[in-house]
Structures are given as structure tokens and as C-alpha cells.
Image (tube, rainbow, N blue to C red; front, side, top):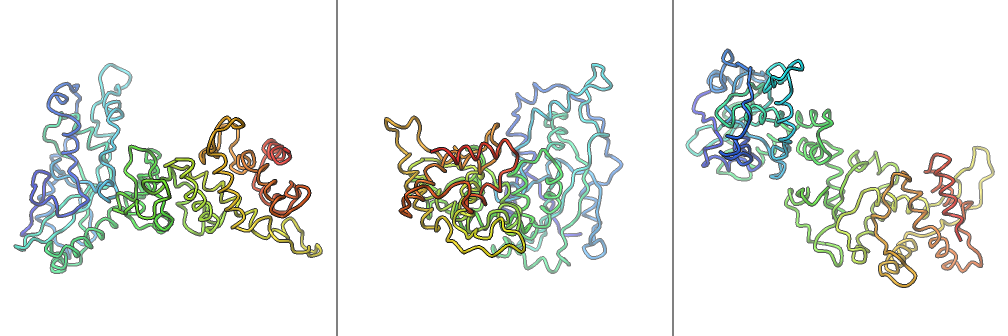
Length: 459
């Protein structure tokens, strides 16, 4: 290829070409200043890549048409390595390297003797990456090497060289844009086209990163979700759209940037009363399996939405900014069992069709129950020793079932509420009621079932 510029992390004038890219060397240098580098141990590095071609040599010989879909193994100077950063709406987390773990690997002993292993080429897989393109006004083609695997390996080699110049072994491919002529439509002057090209690149790169993330136990939920979104995996897109439509922000801890902030969503628009912004959800487990699977299949999308609206209406009383997803599903389970027709529940084939009976509650009835209960339990008085919090519905070591915990907190009052709104002389919402039986069916194990019946029978 001719008329190209291989961009490095110190070429500032080109670094805004793609909004998601960060220089891995720059991140490393921010973590280790000169004094920190000098204090590092002398770790050995037994790698020798001198017999491999350089990235520049691969680029020079590359023919976009003849070499389409080919992979190349070459050595790459650290200054040419970029990553797509999740904090900038990318798919990777180069800022989240576990430096202590990197030190521990470098300090491993060889065959039990006192010599440390350092950077051992036999242990290190090659890094993976792809080459992005961008056309400049003068016709020059900017090339960016974007690494989609190997953040820790990059850091360990940099540590072994105390931040001095080093090379990494890469297996890489060039993005397929069909022909050099087609790159003109991604001219950096046309910002919309440039951003469209960026999305195209991210989808292609993040697919490999996502597959790698799914296989690695070290990848956390946020990393996998970010990679899945960038790779346009349908389950993750459906989960993201659900969160967006229901005004929930996936933010596991205070230290994390929320997914909605990364996506530049205004989380103050439509915020719950008394809150500064949308409610954060700390986990998307069971919600990230697609609209027809996981929690949506088990409880029904409408019931999950009812639960979210109940929480949003009442966080003004509980003052909680982050809710566990098990809380949402606990309340959704109640909407599913107590507001739907369970007349035929438990009937066997051939049984006489039972007389149809209305569900224990309408959705509006259950809405009002939660609103009244939570408001009444939001202040301490001489009869209460604690106030209600949604996160009190969280599963514990002793009770790992969300339905049992729901019964413990709500059922006595729910049964009384059912008696009063129906003007019954006695409580009719018992363990023999069809709606209650449907709820109990979700509990397994003799000990938990006995505990559930105990909470139901409290008067």
C-alpha cells in the first residue's frame, strides 16, 4: 500500500480520527511515572521477534484486493498499539488492567528456584488486532492498529522493559472495505460518514473480543456487556433497548461509568420523583439473554415492566439510587402470579373445567398495595424498628429464593389488603388460593417450601 501513514500514539493531530481509541502506551505511562519505572524489578524477557516482518513491512506489501481476508503475523512497536475504550463507547477496557496480577505473573519462579520468570515467550500468546482506515483531505490513508485481545500481555511486556521501547508479536488482519477507492466515502471531512465507518470497524473488531470475553472467567459482566453491544449481539442489543425504554442505567458500582452515560443518554430526562437521575441497576444477569429467554421468558416482559414502574414510583421514599436485579424479578414474580388468571393451574388433563375466578388482584390493585405499603413503611415510628428498602428483597446465604423473601416481607399485609378490598370477613388469600399456589410452585426444596408456608400462615 502506498500513500499511507501508520499512526502512533504521539501523533496528536490524528488522534481524534476515531472517538473510541486510546493509546495503550499512554495508559501505561500514566500508571507508571519515571520514578515508578525506576523502582521496578529487573524482570527478564526471553522473547525475540527479529525474524518476523515489521508492521510497516506488512503494510508496504499489502494489496487490498489480492490479500483480502489474509492474516499476518508481525512485530509491532508499542507506540502503534491502540485499544477501543469502553469509557469512550468502545468495547475493550485497557484502563482496567490488574497490575498486581501482572507483577505476580512476572515474579513467578522457574522450576521452583529463586529465578523469576519475567516475560516468558512460551507462556505468551500473540496479540490480536485489526487495521482501520481513514482518508485525509490530501488523499493520504491513515492506518490504526487496534488491539482487541491482550491488555495484560501488553502491560507485562512494558513492565519487563520498564516502559522503554519494545515490540509485540501480533496476528492481525486488515478491515475489509472492498477496495481503496471505496475508502473515499469515509472521508474524515464527512463526520457522519466517519462515525459510520467507526461503527463498522467496532462491530467487526469487537466480535472477536466478545468471543474471547465469553470464554474468560476474568471478564466481568460490564466487560462482556460492552463487548456484546459493540459486536451487535442481538441478546445484548435487546437488553440495552429494554433498559433504555424503561429508564434504567446499568452501573454495577459507583466507580463505574454507567452504560447510559457512555452512550451519552440523558439520564435526567424522565427521572423518578425525588431522584437526580435514573435508577441504576447493578447487574443484568437473566436480563441479557434476549427478550424471549432468561428472565423475560420466566416472568414475562410486562410483569418486569410493572415491577420497574413500582420501584420508580417509590424510590422517593426508600432513597435508593441502585437496585439489584433480583429485586426487580422478585416483584415481577408477584405480578405474574397474583394478577393473572390461574383458574386452571394444577388441573390435570381430563379434569372438569373449573369455574373461572378472577385473579387475586388487578395490576392496578397490586400497584396500589405496593405504593401504600412502601409509603407507610418509609418512616420509623414506635411500632417499627427499621424502614423498608427495596434491596431488603435481596437473596441471602440462608434464603436463596426470591419468592420466599417476598413472602417474608409482604405476604401478611398482602393477604390483609386482599381481604379488605374485597370486603371479605376472613382472609381468602391463603396457601390454597390458586394464585398463591402458582407463586409457591416457583419454590423448590422441602426446607424452603416449609419456610414459605410458615410466612403465608402468619396471622
